[in-house]
Image (cartoon, rainbow, N blue to C red):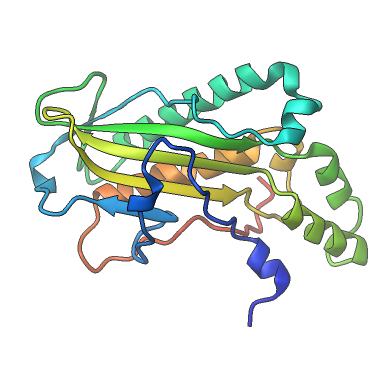
Length: 231
């Protein structure tokens, strides 16, 4: 039986911000994201290129405490920076794919796929809480209690995505996922506002390449909830 802390390591799926019709998506146990929808009868092998569009931020669901507190005046730039980072990571992941399944193009081409994404939630790390988390030796009552508090007050990031046929504009797949920051005994990235969110984006990018290379019967593991590495 899972402990209450174990249950808190995985974020609840997002209700949806409206970028994709969430009611059409469902959990696919073989894929790493919370929910997915894939159009039946698509000849995926006919696609050899992919265009990754600039990341949409219009649907962003912002936590109230963020709007009202320490980073309110920097919120707009934070969001734009994360959107640019996300697009760059997805481009890099496909370019670095050793299987070269899909070649990245910088504008939509005939016969290509278009990946459109939206960041729908972005809650930065609570830096002061992370300072408390490492105040005592790992395994002490203080550290254990802080780890519990960390699970209750995670930084989070969520995205919704759709893949379109560049020729027809028809949506052929949709995905959505929401993740807490990766938990670490000593979290050096937790001392930055978005280091943990960037971790998750990097995992999403790599997972998306795995999904593009997916073969029936394969299992693609979800993002790791815990790491012993401090960075």
